[in-house]
Image (tube, rainbow, N blue to C red; front, side):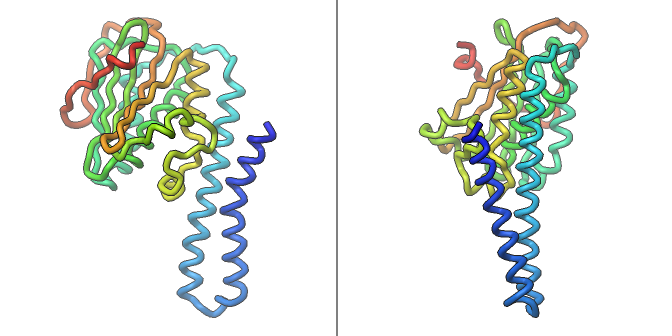
Length: 249
């Protein structure tokens, strides 16, 4: 708990100190320099937005921990959920010349869970894939039944994650690429939130990455109920199937 408080304090202190410093500069040496003030205000806005993102993610993490032992009562159509997430992130993808490509297996079962929390899981994973994938590539999302679970995999075509960072992914405030994460507004809490939510749902997160070839984040959820009338859909263009063999262990 003390380590967590110290980490939170450090994450908030840096942008807060920056904002205070720029305010003092605007009030002093740059009081009559309109161009400098405009630049400083832009930086201050970015730092304030970063602090707001950290606070928002801290609240999400707290809510996930508080709900950890609450029963799951909703039956969720994953095809509909993934389509909704992808539609909401289409604009982010288009701004980088990217496309979100979703494939859902025909007859995919419903899962029992908390719809808002699972929405947050896939929103975090797909948004990360957009941020860390290469421009003008696709983000591929595929959901299929595998063994005793349902696997939803999100693949990007970015720089990948060096092996030394893999054991630390999911730790609070850990960033494999701290510079890129701060530039894109990341709080370093996204995967910690994902893992807390999956713990409540009896699920798990598998991560595979090859430097230079991109990363694959795969969520496995337990199978609950078959939904015979479900239909497959494509959110965008055709893509090949993903290889799940190494995720079945």
